[in-house]
Image (cartoon, rainbow, N blue to C red; front, side):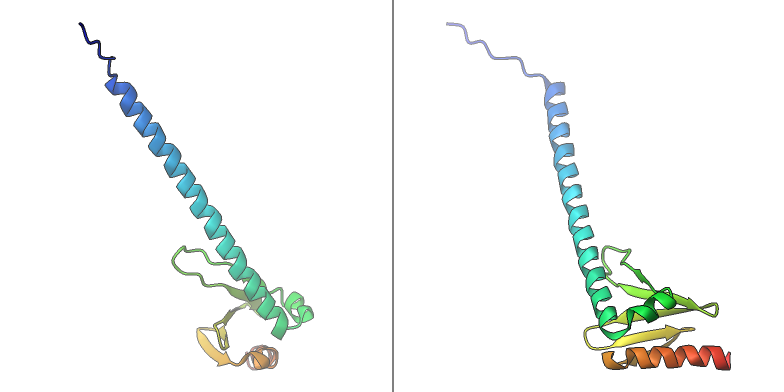
Length: 129
């Protein structure tokens, strides 16, 4: 009785393993990208909602405030920025307060004072600058 073993094709085995690994890597990367986009959209949406709560949309549009989504995977920081009289102003939100940054000077305020403080700081720029 003669036993016949099928031929083993090493090149085909390598190619098959490589292709399976590449397909798995593509799926993982695609899932990561979707998760990242979902997180960014959620954070950006929440920030806009908070901004809308404490700063009238008329003021936002007049000042051309733009929401800046996070750019790094490890740092999910969303903020808004605007330029007023050639000065960049950033608005950030943490769990408790808002932070207004003008010329590297930060002012931390409770949410209900965002509108009043922002307008006051813009008045300072306009009248003292």
